[in-house]
Image 1: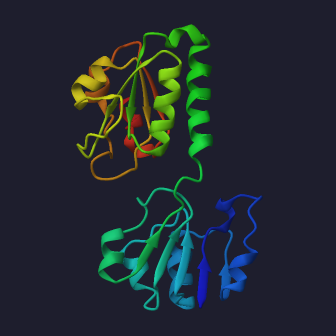
Image 2 (image 1 turned 90 degrees about the vertical axis):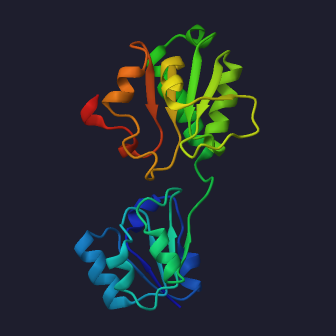
Image 3 (image 1 turned 30 degrees about the vertical axis):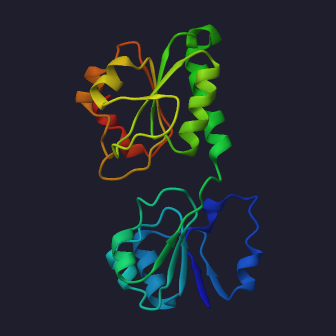
Length: 220
């Protein structure tokens, strides 16, 4: 089996990848530009490609006819054309839950850094965008801090949780603190734009722990 790693430097210095070399013929690159990635995937024609930041779109996928699997060394799929991969019978896998605890901790580190006073949270409304594993972890701690917790679901699904789901307009108006833990997709891209900011409290705090393009920085 031929395995191609295109941006192994993104794994971190403390990750041992020796096991991959037991699975087949491995070629690894620390980083790859778009042009380099296309050239390397075409020349090596791997059965498995392992990426983190590289965009695996139609052009990339078509460049490797032998490709059977795209492994994403992160939680988000936004850099992969999942629909096209499925059409080509290429399996797509990610690393689910690897950063849950650290992201939950980082959320509160950011919040505490901005607020500096624990008492601020009591009675405040904490709004969560994306009530997945990380979002639920944040919700539990926010509730323990004395916050009222509400959430917004971009998919429109209501979950069996002890928190209220709000539509976006009401969610923005009610939240004193907003933390984002959603994936980047068509429903969340540019979700927080100038129109959204206008509906938020002037004293509100926004913490983006999701992908950057969920928040339109140009409108801040």
